[in-house]
Image 1: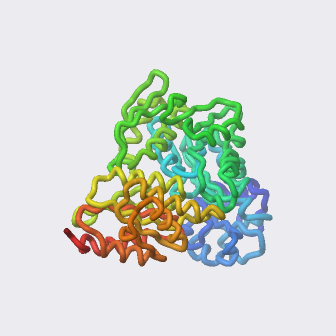
Image 2: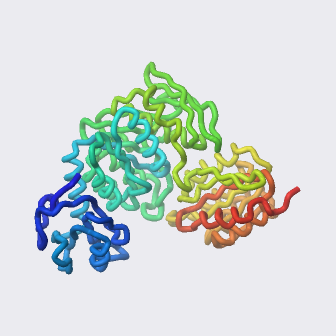
Image 3: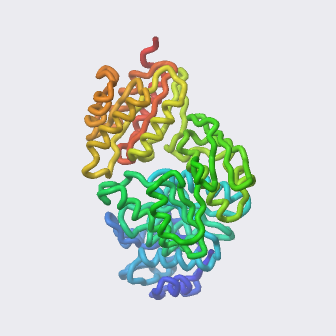
Length: 462
């Protein structure tokens, strides 16, 4: 939506300190390096950077205006909107645009599967509606407002909501005012900041507190912690899952790294679904997307058509083929115990000569980190991993668990960096191997994949 400088100032409780109040805005940015001509630049004061120091760079790239909380020089061709808090101004403007657009909002959160569920919901809903979805992982108190500020003629916005502290989901709901709230699952992600999984559930459950009374809660019928949080909302609920209690119920025919096939039932409706998304865990994400579409009265027989070409997001289960028939499963975007178990299950379904797991540290697990990494080693062993490489400062605990579970020392290795892991994998690859790379974002295992790919299948063959 195009706005004038004066309209922006009014909507964010600011004032046009300089420049023409009728100047038009054609877009919004908080990154001075990526400003495009005609965009309004918000000088965000963040934990590491102060956007006020980069105003001149934003103007040089063509910013039409600046939103700032202190005096900055903008020249005569650019307008300046003064506000008390630039982050709050960004959020308030997004909330106003959301109201003005009159869209229905689908909000999605969970410990795992948020982005894939967002993509699935958007694809399913798009069979009947014009849909805006948040790009990538723009799911925090900066990214979600920027997503809403892209609204045009869409009738539905599908938004991902992330959090690392209590109250964050509640604030995002104040901005987005969801009509449909989806909670995929509750697990150990960000345990360092919450102490217990129950506390994580409470924070995720804020998505139901922020739901409109006439809205719809979409909940995982097979996750007790989700069901507990859903009690916070007294309105309409749609349950998804594989159990008999699910309203949108799946029956899995096959699930592997090549994709999934399942049948979904919703009342008397029944439809077969085929998707290239890999692994049984993605059946839940797809069911959640179908349930969100159902909440907006899209029949599952129609919604399912949108899922047939849905591909894994970057570094989230991507399947790469190397020379010599080597298959790489790229799960390097992030990791937590629940997500790791799902990735190991996926690895076990892939036919191959050897199954190699490269497991990077799972970060932000607090005092439970050591034991959860030992359990990761046990989980790898229970799924028949042939070679296990642990990466990072917590790698020794992974190997400790794997040894306790019976994996021979000769099939185990520890390295401290992604680069070392890549070189090690490059040297041991054999024809027909399947290699899973899974770790938290901070470990950077995507670099290990690049190094391993340079070696192709030049390792030992037998």
